[in-house]
Image (tube, rainbow, N blue to C red; front, side):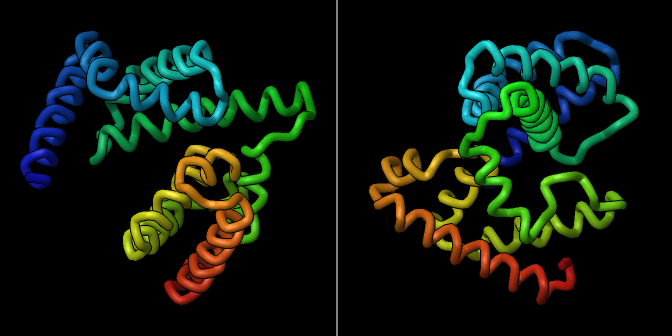
Length: 195
């Protein structure tokens, strides 16, 4: 069943890419229909605003329109989500510099800073791909609950309080679990020669 679902997704994504290459605006409406809710969910988790979610999605659609062609991503959904997430993070950083407030997003990035710099210091796309592949492989080896905790914390920037509530845990247990996962990830990345 999963293979069939992946095949359907791949066909739909290829159709969207074909429309983009033909400069057909229907590609954007198909993108919104297929991935709009997911994209907005990612932005809401980072910024907490429906208006920002809509604006980041629109900005991402413009970037997709302007970059395909020449770009031909292997995974259209991942490509789109990366753009949406980067837009949301850029908005967050801009607000942070304006307000100089603190939130769980900066806290989550600080937690990972020992492993991976929050700034884009990786020199080449090959090194980036190698790092992402290693993190993905590491996450696939984790039990589902730990993987979900990690992704919710470091991809979607959920607070400890939210995670504790959603996973039926104490906040302290969430912190300890995530700390252990980060240490395992650091060891794994060193073993793989990525760090």
